[in-house]
Length: 340
Image (cartoon, rainbow, N blue to C red; front, side, top):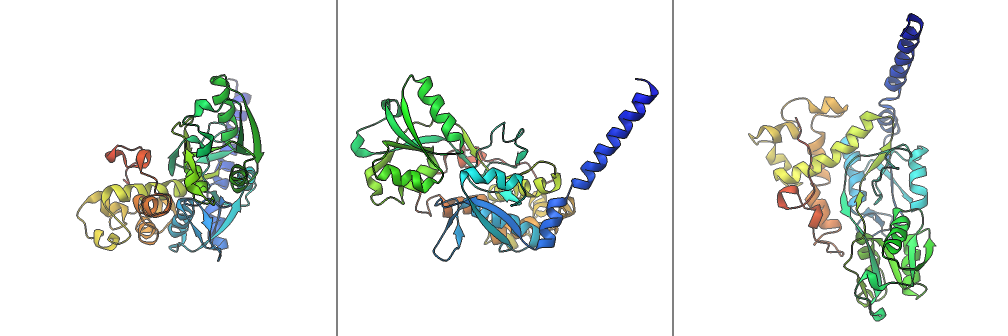
């Protein structure tokens, strides 16, 4: 490389480094200046993000939003929920309309690269399935040859559906809807034979039907659907905060730290617990947050297990078993790196 090329390369590298430095932290600064987190959620999915008549949101995705607000402000109420359809959700994040998307969104290679997004972790390990009326007499997905299938537009579900039927040499007629509620109503009205979506969403839609016991989720799971919070490319500081908010909740469950005993656990002699709860070290400085921010998240929102059980687990209407979403120590996939 000659001197001129060396100088050009150095100048380019310097400019890129300066651009990256200028961009880092923009989201956190904007959030703090605004005074609340803008969080994109579902337009109505029980167990994940669902608003009651008064506009109060509940669900595992909504609680992740609250946890992020608690991390940044020490107050889980410092946020604004933005309900989004599947078609709207990614554009809303890309455009800056929201700071974070927590809306049962599947982590895929194209979304994590070409679409300029970063998935921060997995809130819920899911998989696509099928919901049918029992009177159809179908016991398995391979009996659906020739079926009319309701599917939500703008989702990974559409491609999975096509791939599954093609791989099994079956035919189907798709009917696409923008909203999940529209798909469920179409199934209930008999306009389609089957509704396909993530299994968690099928259970959520099933309990909203007039006669839920008339419908059954078929046993087959035809895809991997890791669902989790999403942020934009280009802001590592914000990415770290959202990611480690989820990790803090998972680690807390593993360590036995709950919303009820978090203050007592600060007296623990376990160095891992002391670091996590801000009693020892200065881990808050690493994130640009208060030193006890993880303790605040757990106290105000709960650990991962607490959130799971009250939103989609045995303490909820969905009553979904932990399964893959159990801790790694309990045979599941939920695992978080250590705080150190």
